[in-house]
Each structure stands twice: as structure tokens, then as C-alpha cells.
Amino acid sequence: MTVSMLQRFICLSRLASTLAVGIVIAAQPIAAAHAQGDATLGGLPLTPDSVVYDLQIVATVEAEQTWEKNDPEYPGRQWSTATGTQRYEIFTQLATDGRADPRNLLDHDLNTRLEAKTIHLARSAVRLMEAAGKSVKIPETPEEERALTLQMQREMIACEAQPVCYQEIQMRYAAIFAAMNYPEALEEDTVPGQYLYMLPFRGCKGRSRVTLELSIEGVRYNKSADDFVPFSEHREADTVDAFEGLPLCDRFLAVIDLKDQERGFYLENVFVPRPTGTTTYTELGHTSKKTEPQPMPPAAVDWLTAVLRQAAPSGSAESVQPLYLSLNGNSTWLGLWKGEAKVKMEWRFAPADNNNAQPKTP
Image (cartoon, rainbow, N blue to C red; front, top):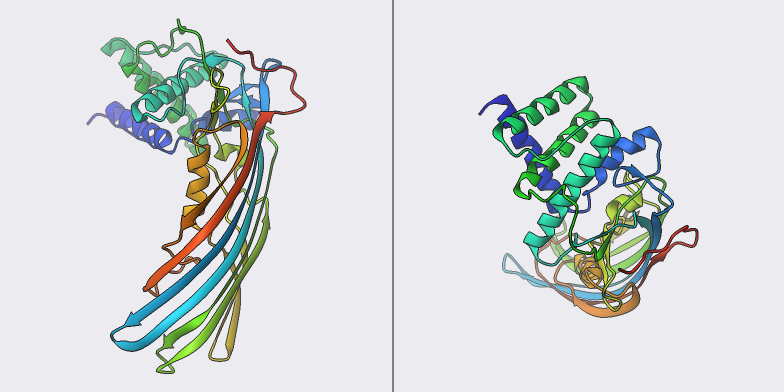
């Protein structure tokens, strides 16, 4: 494999990872604009035509669970009961440049979705490069492909081994190389647009609060005591704005279908910041207390995403989800967990009050 082929392979591998995760679709172009200090949308400045949307999600979880274990090596009943409550409050912002696209970036069909994302990434990359004074087109011949590869290599060398610069260039060129499978990627669309892409932007507002309380009581076998002993565990957390190094909006991606007023809101995923709190455990008269990340029931969080994968722009929903994994996140004790989580959610996705423009229905 030649050097240029290897570099292209690395670029396309990075792009494939980005497309699979999805939510990072604009992260690399945005990073470059962040360094310049501009408010950005997909790497470009917000304009008077841009529309900022507020996303608000509030969800509650009420859970009950039992655990039983009969270990042939230590005959006897081991058991516990658990009750827990959690509340998630999320507020962030996304923005559209006002241009309606004929492709749904979050289409339920995988191939359709990948095509839309590939074309969107390529167009975003080209706009960024043109804004920097670089001329670029999708290669149509082996000679043009080699010329674009050399151009990429020169820009990588100019990065002088700066990792962020190096990765941004790889992502931009990977998008262009991937778009070779879609010759129309950089051409003007000939059909009316239907979908508004809602992307992270520089300066987006974000707030979150996650509260949690969990109590467990039961009996388990203690090897040191060679006996079945009672134990208790209590967890609690109240965590505000745990963004883990990224603006909260960078965790979200949405689409609005302008022709579907009932269920035209698509959200790629619901990111709930993981809370940090205290765990207090008591057994054999000894109590330990430590601060650590606290678990959230995967079934509950997954349900939030499933509901908002396509929904009305605002609404509410509730469900009862089975709990087959331990509420405290520790399933190493083995045994059988049974339980339910009552999950309720309210959400709203609407233009922010300080917009200068509103989306126009085609």
C-alpha cells in the first residue's frame, strides 16, 4: 500500500467512524471555527437567516427491583430489594442555516441516512475550504484524485504535527473522497428541499441537572464470615452541567421535516450527562462511603432516544421498561434481577425567542 493510499484509508476510516456515531457529524469543522472564535453552524458563521432552536427535555424514572441468587456452592437464599428515583433536566440549542435539504440526515433507512450524511459532510468541507481560499472539487479521474491527495498531504505537512489541525484536515478530505460515490454531491439540488438540519454551533447555551437516589437492602453470602449477612447500599447524586469537556449541543443532532407537522421532529439520540454522587455501603457493621459516577438504567435512557427518534416537536410520553440488570450498575454478583422502571418524559423543540428569522415552509 502506498503512502497516499494509506493516508486515504486512514481518512476514510475516520469518516466511517464519524458517520457511525452520527452526532459528531459537524464536530471537526466546528473545531476549526472555535479556534477562530466565530459563532458557527457546521463550521460556518451564523447569519441573519440562521434560526436557533431551543431543545428542552425533562424525564423522570421511578424504579423497583428485586434480586435473588441460589448458589450451589453456598446453599441458601440471597436476595435484595431496591427502589430508586431519577430526574433528568436537559436544555441546549441547535441551529439551522435556513436551507432546506431534500435528504433526511436522520432517515430511518441506514443507506439513505449514510448517503445524506456523506453528501452533507462533503458540502460542509468544501464550504470551509472555499472560505479559506482553497479550490476543491470531487475527483472524476485518477489524475484529479492524485492531485487532491497531494493537496491533502501538503496541508498535513503544514500542520507541523499539531494533532487537532491534522485530524481536521483528514476529516475534510475524507468527506470529499467519500463523496466520489455520489457525483451529485456538490451539485445544486434540483428538487425542493424538505428537511432542515439542526446542528451544534459556537456559543450555544446548555444546561443540565441529573438527580438520583437509590436504596438497596438484602442478604448475601459473605466469605469472610462464612455466613449470610444483611447489607444495605444507598446512592445519591445531584449533578449540574456535567458536559465532559464538550458543549452540550455538540452531543445532539436534529432534523425538522417541513412537510410533516405531526411527527416531523427527528433527534439522533438523547445524551444524559452521567451524574457523580456518593455511594454508602454497610455490611457486618462496617460502613464505607465514596464519591463516584452513578449508574442510569440503560433501558430508560434507550427509551428516551427511541421516542424522540421521530416525534412531534413537543409532547410527552410515558412507558414501563423492564429491568434485567442491576440498578446499581454492578451485576458481578450474578443471580436474577427482576423489576420495572416507570419512565415519563416531556420535551419541546422550538425556535428561540431571540431569532431574527423563522423557517419557511416550501
